Image (cartoon, rainbow, N blue to C red; front, side, top):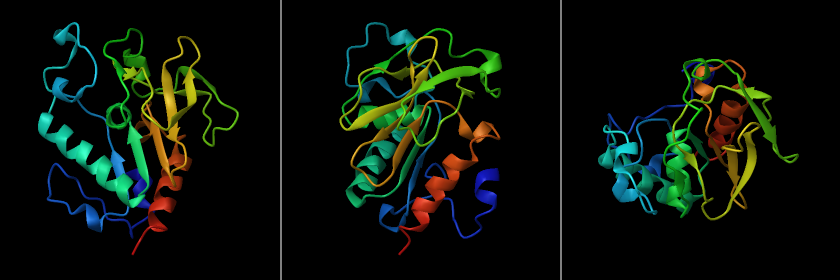
Length: 195
């Protein structure tokens, strides 16, 4: 909410609460949440117990459909944490289904995880507040990595090549104060899409 507060002209619709017509949307924000339900993953799952019990197939189905619809219209897409994972899977990628050391209490809200980034990355943060137990493994079609964890190489930021605006981050910009530029770019791209 703080990042959208300065933009009263932007209406936010939550697909969990309201019926949405994608034809009326100017952008897609894929947020964090429970693990993707197993039936949507495009990989072998050796141990189903690593998937969180509160996976929501209904939400996943809507979000996979929303990605397809948004991309069909060239809408700006901003994907955060689970949203990044879902976006990657939607484009044929796979996930690390359970990783260690990325879900520690101090990582939830504090920018403590060091990053390395590609020289062409538009948004560069020295440290981020990344907290998760799954992450991108094989990249979906068209993605390129912009930043990764400096200690173990887990992908933390990527963008879709040859697309107007599609940014995916594993960290949680909604929980921090240093990430305003990321939201501002997304909002700016949405505003340029308005009918």
